[in-house]
Image (cartoon, rainbow, N blue to C red; front, side, top):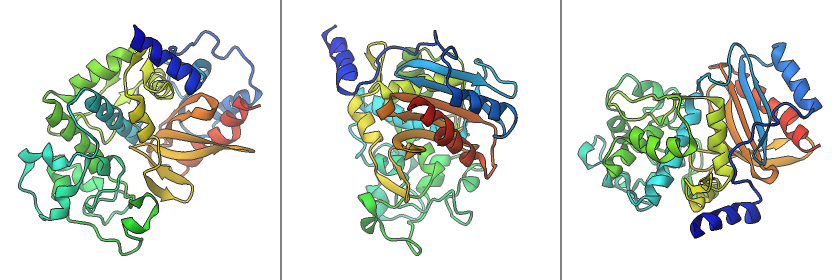
Length: 357
């Protein structure tokens, strides 16, 4: 009882967020002209293939709309947005004592995959944190079609973990070396590394990772409907692809805003979330990266820092702590070059200004 009270007071008075569950009692009942304008623009097709937009301020859901045949029960494949599940599950695994630290060497948990191809002492030093920050020394870059570790080369292979471990060491011919970059890391987007986190956690925990997720994340949050995606080896796919409802995505990001607390229960350690949402690697001038979370600012006249889950198609599950704001935007704009500009515009031109009027 005392621990629960401390958690509640910590959230309420220190971080000025809400530890209550999401309140849908006043959704769409308060007039926000900019949100109404956004709704009209989406409905008329200015922003293609948007499937849902949900906005909650300090735990009160103020906007919830579904488009293109979707409703509150629809499950959305947000592609790489669900990479962040690996971050949440790693924090819980550390809390439960299955993993000592994000500084643990990954080979400690993957001895059953030895020996590896392209052996190198530097591989032995790769940590869980290196995978969470997309900055390991392995040559893996989904943004480069020539990369040995590009995800399109991984998908046809049965053993995704070995695919990752067998990669050669990367070089830095067109960019500064890690020590010369902000935060001392060189960002390289790598789905294979994100998928390997699940294999590491499953090995550390000793039980299927999906069962661990259900017991320690889904059930406490009341997440009951989902479609989980698995690797060919049957491990939960933390490279992306699983489907959840928009309301459940909103629960996940609101829980993060609550410093990991949901209904008085500490689901994810608050210290872990602070680490996860602190810049660890520079993506480009206006975007940093935490632990499988993107970090950037949104707004029009004034910018507000956010951290968010992101995926192909412009998917965004965002938290803006200064505003106590949680936002979910789902789409089916897979492969559309305008996908992220569309959802960025929804944030910059409508949602953030509406919540700061």
